[in-house]
Every structure is written in structure tokens, then in C-alpha cells.
Amino acid sequence: MSIAEKVFDSLCQAIVMGDIASGSKISEPELAKYYKVSRASLRDAIGRLEACNLVIRRPNVGARVVSLSDKELLEIYTVREA
Image (cartoon, rainbow, N blue to C red; front, top):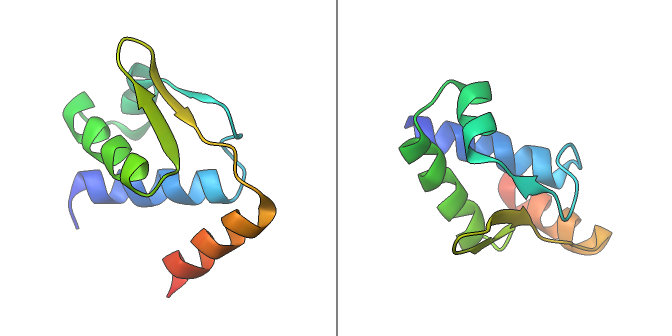
């Protein structure tokens, strides 16, 4: 498992479990420091989160966690466990 995959899994779980709140801004420098990874690996993980519709990225603004209903979160969590 690559570093980006590990960060993706950790961030995905944090979003689904509510540890990172809906609507929260994702700070690349802070997360790169927290996970002790390069920003390139972190950007890859954020790109995967965007592909899963868990974050929205906007040029020159950054990424934000999307707002999901409890039902949508449960569906995502169930799929991730399978």
C-alpha cells in the first residue's frame, strides 16, 4: 500500500466518522505535517477523496469536505468496509 493510499484511507475514515466535519477546509500544509508525508502524496490522496465525492476542490481556494446526510455517510462507510 502506497503512502497516498494510507493517507487516503485515514482521511476517508476521519470524514466518514465525523472526525473531520462537513464543510471543513482541508489544509494541505497542516495535513502533510500531521501525516509526515509530502504534499504530492497528500494531493494524490485528496484527489482520490474528490473522486469519491467526499471533498470538493476549487482552484486557488483549496479543498473542503462535502456535506453528506447520515444515510450517505453510512453507504460510503459500508462500501469501504466491504
